[in-house]
Image (cartoon, rainbow, N blue to C red; front, side):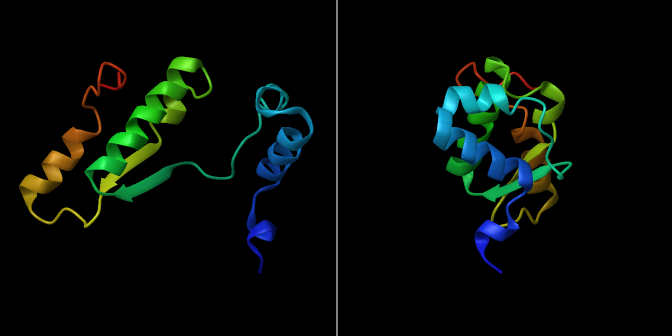
Amino acid sequence: MSNEATKPHHFKRYLRLKAEHGAEQAIALSQGERSRYNEIWYFGPPRVRRQVRRERARLVERGSLSQAEADRIYTLWYPLAKTVEEKQQEADEDGVDLDGIDRRE
């Protein structure tokens, strides 16, 4: 199965709109499109987790992502947290203020 065949219909539509009209127009025309996924989980080292959290906050700030949608984007440790302390730190980390951008509680 090709990578193209596995992309959701709304994503294919967005890519076509972007190619035809540019990114800003594609975003406007694809408002209201829904993903088949309820949540997204990112596993990565600290630098990747911080980058994902910053971008998630920027998307909320721009209005491209609702807070409810942002709350369903999780950033988790890789390698996986093992000790009770690491698991607690991982849970606390997701709400940390990053350069004044991440406003999750």
